[in-house]
Amino acid sequence: TGRPEIAFTGAAAEHVTFSYGNETILSDVSAEIPQHSVVGIVGRSGSGKSTLLKLLMRFWDVQRGSVKLSGTKAADINTKNLREMESFVTQETHLFHDSVRNNLKIAKLDATDEEIKEACKKASVHHFIMMLPQGYDTPVGELGDTLSGGERQRLGLARAFLHNAPFLLLDEPTSNLDSLNEAVILKSLHEEREGKTVVLVSHRQSTMRIADTVYSVEHGRMS
Ligand code: ATP
Ligand code: MG
Image (cartoon, rainbow, N blue to C red; front, side, top):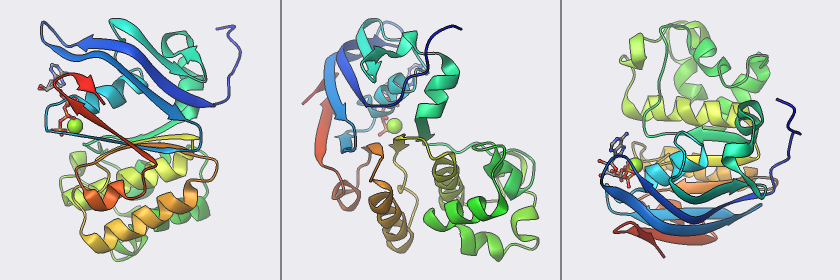
């Protein structure tokens, strides 16, 4: 399209109302995600945290209110521009029946081996990969079912680090990880935060420590 490319300067939800069907999940929700901040989102299971992240990724369109990126309605930003702005880790990491390397490269098609290795170190998964029979050339099973939840999660994080967009959306990025792996990842996020904006959904108190602001979602409302 002829729309100009815009740089990421922060995100916001403004009076957002959203439902999947008849049931309203979010009701008149507003949140400010200033550039270069780490914003945490907490709330009970099923409260709408992932839904909110998905709205920020424009997986769905809002029914009322607006989601804005760089002051522009998400709906008015072209998809390529949107994907360049955002790196995300969802609660499920989808892997293809292909090598570890190719599974990572979907985040950056022209990534060099060195860049891949760096991203994997940040995600605390490089050593694990090096212990696989063929390292980065090891095939992963369909949907990655040969890997544990925590290994898949770290590969998802490695993708996000490799993609290296200015806006990082992380949905429970450390939920399946032991505290040692979590510490590596939080350290990486902390080091990355210069020049990055992060939205972080987590139940873990230890993860929320890196957040500047924490919103709580409850009964469709956010405070
Ligand atoms: P959790 O902490 O368990 O990940 P959450 O806060 O992320 O929960 P959401 O995934 O945002 O919760 O879901 C909010 C509500 O919307 C839930 O009741 C869920 O069942 C429902 N829901 C989520 N995705 C869909 C969908 N694609 N279609 C219909 N309903 C959905
Ligand atoms: Mg969720």
